[in-house]
Image 1 (cartoon, rainbow, N blue to C red):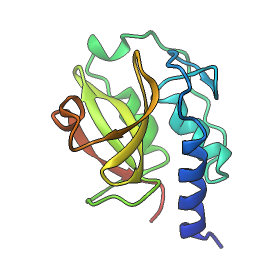
Image 2 (image 1 turned 180 degrees about the horizontal axis):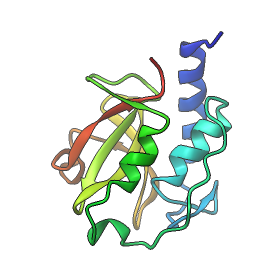
Image 3 (image 1 turned 60 degrees about the horizontal axis):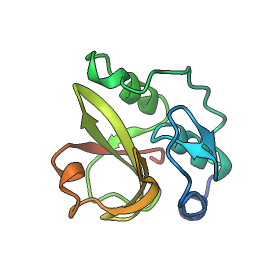
Amino acid sequence: MRNEEAERKAVVAEAMTWLGTPYHNCGRIKGAGVDCGMILAEIYERAGVLPHVEIEPYPFDWHLHRSEEKYLNTISQYAHPIQGPPQPGDIALYKFGRCVSHGAIVIQWPQLLHAYVHLGVVLDDAEANSALSSRFYGFYSIWD
């Protein structure tokens, strides 16, 4: 039987160990390089709540030139939409370009951890960061 509270704490604890990791498209190595998609896969796997998620390589600007919801479709295989406010360990999704193309782990709403171009893995206030708040899509959770 799953212990949701323990799993959420494990996700947040693992997420915090990624702080300061540089941004690297398609990277998924703590301390060396990661992007906003791969970090979600790695955190949930390392926290022991999801199996390994294999993600095909993709170009840096994949989301700017098409409307196919690749990022959202991958997230939707493991998580479902929820109404806010989110709980620690849930996912906040954002639209950059034509489709959902950015995700972050909720630490304690509105505090998020995400891998951001030019900044790497950072903590951010989702409500104070206008680049995020203006592009908000929705919350997703792996828990029922």
